[in-house]
Length: 280
Image (cartoon, one colour):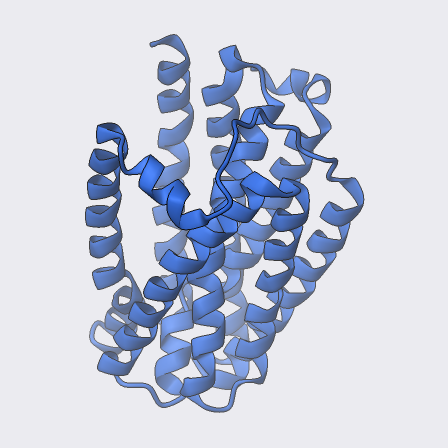
């Protein structure tokens, strides 16, 4: 799917693509500094890990329920409602005076990371022809990855200009993130159309639906793979930047470059994999 043909693709796909670009840039502004920010508000490593554990447990329940609602009601409404909740996250970080308050945005992050990703996957899949679907996904990931490469370096330069890794300086990044996400949400509300999906006869209970899914051997295997990946991510990710800053002495700009290189590696891999998936 060449870039020049994007205009001929479904409007909903272009809306999701634009939304991901903006949200990736906004998220990249704070992704490397959130754990440091929470620690500087008074949390110790055990408390930091505990916050993320609670967020993961809650998201596991909420994401399943949200998916059920999307199956039974308007996927567009459920998606936009989920997107609206994400705006609260940078706002709470901005006003937080105590680390305990950051449990709210951490919960929102974990819930939205899985829920919105799930719903966007469905919207993209329904918006693209089957022959170009994997390439369309990889293009979305690649372009949003480009935004997330630029923003950590921008954030690092801003913090370096302001004087370094201080709470008052990092608060400014959360304010900018809040403004970008709010504007993007309003634009998405005005432009995203209804999503029409093929539905089978669903049960009236999300728990019955889960039982139905667990009958599949393939689903069980996939859940094992996802669980192992999530365990490694959750065990390491909250502490990487804290370790780099407090143990290795990395400054704000170095942390920004680390995030940019990480996102660059991700971006360079997705399009070749997508093209391979479309062919095989």
